[in-house]
Structure formats: C-alpha cells, structure tokens
Length: 182
Image 1 (cartoon, rainbow, N blue to C red):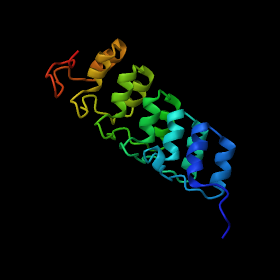
Image 2 (cartoon, one colour):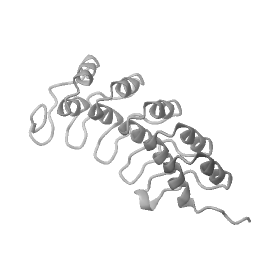
Image 3 (cartoon, rainbow, N blue to C red):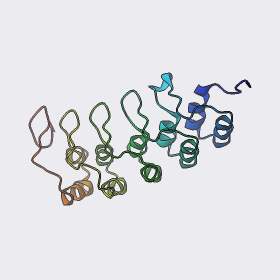
Image 4 (cartoon, one colour):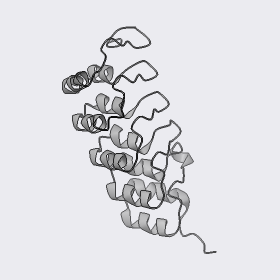
C-alpha cells in the first residue's frame, strides 16, 4: 500500500484556492472527494468549489464521486453555496447534475430564499424554471422569499415572485406583520 502524498484536509484547501492541477493530483492519489472538514463546519470540498464558483473543480469532484447533496453542519448543500454566493453557472451545473433545489438548511432557508435575499433575478429564474421550488416556503422565522426580497428592496424579484404565485398574506413568526418588523 503506497503512502499518501497529501492529507485529506489539503483537498478542501486546494479546492477553495482554485488549484485545479493540485486537486487533480490529490484525486489521482485517491483522496476522498467527500472528506468532511471538521475545521470547516463539516463542509465537503464540493461545498468550497460551489461557494467559490470553481466550475471545473465542481466537475472534477463529481466525476471522482463527490456527493452532490452533501450537507454541512448547518445542513447547507453545495447548490445552496452556489446560490448564496451568486454563482449562476455553478448553480446551473449543480442542478443539471441532480442538486436538490428544495433542501432546507438548519434555519429553514431554501435556495429560493437565498436568491430572493440577494436580488439575483437570473438565479431566481433558474430556480423557478425547475418547477420544484415552493415560492411560499417559510424559513424558521416564517419569512418567505418575497418577504426577504422586500426586506432588501429587490423590486424586480418581488414582481417575479408575484407572477409565480407568491402569497403576500403570509406573516412571519414574530410580528405577524406582512413585511417583518421593518
């Protein structure tokens, strides 16, 4: 049995830095593409690649057997990372490869919550086009994507969500007010 040249934790760091050739070498050295980094809230290398929008590395990791729907300590998936950090092409790729669009993280947020919060209309359209998102999904605070969009004054996102059936009568868990505490 040959000795590993790399420690499994190095894969996460190299992915995060976008070091494509180093990642290839590590995967050829049989490093686990699903190795959860305790130092990084149990995030997988794919979480790091998606967060940074490193499309080629996302592809490499998935080819090497990375779990597209791996969850970290907060139950966030790589697709959620791509959405939350506005990497549309990485999100599109993750969706094509089977990324679950309706997963909820620990605080109840979905990909659609993140896209609405960021005001990213292209991302919002990408997610809506899957036909698998709940436009009225409520996070743990009772906030829906349209409430987050209103909180951040993303008018076009609000319009788009309204055309897709967003319910403006839903209230949050704290104030009972339509748009939160304000």
